[in-house]
Amino acid sequence: MPYSREKAVAYAHKWAYGRNPRYLNYDNLGGDCTNFISQCIHAGGARMNYTPTYGWFYINGNRKAPAWTGVQYLYRFLTDNAGPGPHGSVVALSGVDIGDVIQLSFDGNVFGHSLFVVQAGPSAESVLVATHTNDADYRPLSSYEFKKYRCIHILGSR
Image (cartoon, rainbow, N blue to C red):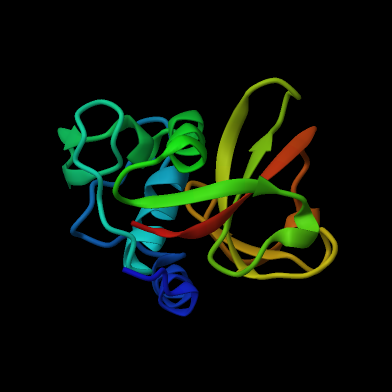
């Protein structure tokens, strides 16, 4: 199934400042950012991978893969996934497109926040993102204070 960047971004705009009742809100359980990013990717047509532990899926708040809600787990799943579901590769900021993911490290060591690209551009000022936890839509990447970032370009879904 092809990945529709436009559908994924439309979902991001619809739910950036709200919570889809079909999913548990993780704001008080460590943050909702990666849960939101996974929802966006899924809304873009990426199929779930129901592999226990190492897959990418959401059934309910108690039955989900770590990659659905965890920053590091999502990164590993997207960049290592050879099975069903979305897959991607690390790119420079200039290689991001709408519907891609940017993850931030605030201490320079651990990546702890996921952002969804809703407008691409050649610089941190022109890349705009949507996210949860500290809800935002059309927020410039340059407005965040971080030590490092990494960009994951979604290549598609198998």
